Length: 185
Ligand code: NI
Figure 1 (cartoon, rainbow, N blue to C red):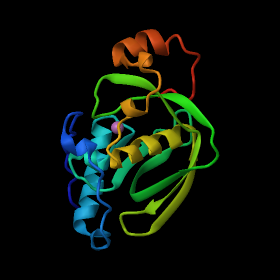
Figure 2: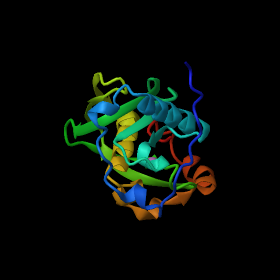
Figure 3: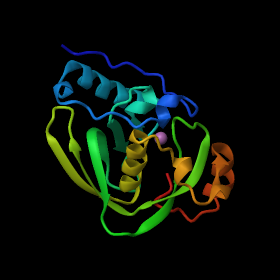
Figure 4: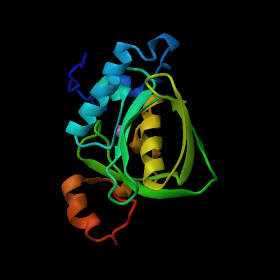
């Protein structure tokens, strides 16, 4: 039976669930209809909202999973993927700044320092273990989404608040001024 994915409402900054530490997905939820549905809804909603990532707390589900994808413009494509109970650790100490936005903070962009390379361990919706190494924009997206599971948003990570900009102004003044930086989404 195929279930039609639902578009979920994305909550915005100020909603208390965005600031909670999300609960690990319990063992009995793996491979369940509920988790498959939630994963499909996260991917569906992420695509409709034109985001590259969406964490369960952003749809008011305080559980440790998120969806993401990479369109494959400046880096290899990653198909829409859901990672459950992820653990992230940096590979090396190198950090770099890059532009981020967030569906829960619509309209704003800011420069955020992130680890250049990370290792992620987690589970798939089926329960299968997953493990991957990511760098650059891929690593940035994963760190941004993982932060949502700990009640952290990109504004909390910004060290240069002066870079904060509304999207139309960012496109007009910042994006055109920058040498096409591959890390700029
Ligand atoms: Ni976000």
